[in-house]
Image (tube, rainbow, N blue to C red; front, side):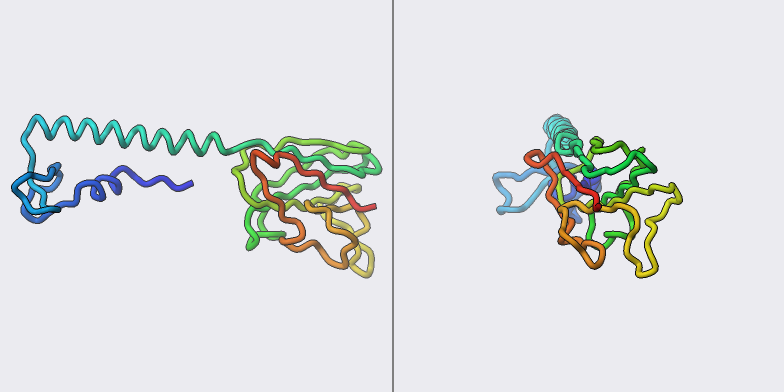
Length: 189
């Protein structure tokens, strides 16, 4: 979430003119043409300044509160864990360009047969993809046979069927939000 700095908000509300001192607050006058601005009287300027500061603080507080209210915990369940041997290596991606390259979050969990559930905190609503494998020998890599076929259990969000290659972003993508707070991934046999 991007927040505008207060200094970028004020010029949009009160555009400066070359005939007024820098930093002065302006208001429209009845005798001036539409859109013309002039410097207001001292006490009225102070009231306007106080109102603007209060409005800016309220707007920023609302932006921060809205962002915090939207973040939620994802409940991830991993099914088909055949043995408690090794570690579950889990990667969560939020961007198709980073998929299987740079994870938003990476988790290591002890494998617990036949199923385990973990909460992943503070995710904003959006599209995500999860990849995982059970590192049975704890060598921190997905082992494969001579043909390149994984010899350790693996899985993807979306649970795509029998694959001849890793799942694509589109196959693994899921929408996370208040109406979809849970994902189940089934490890391969």
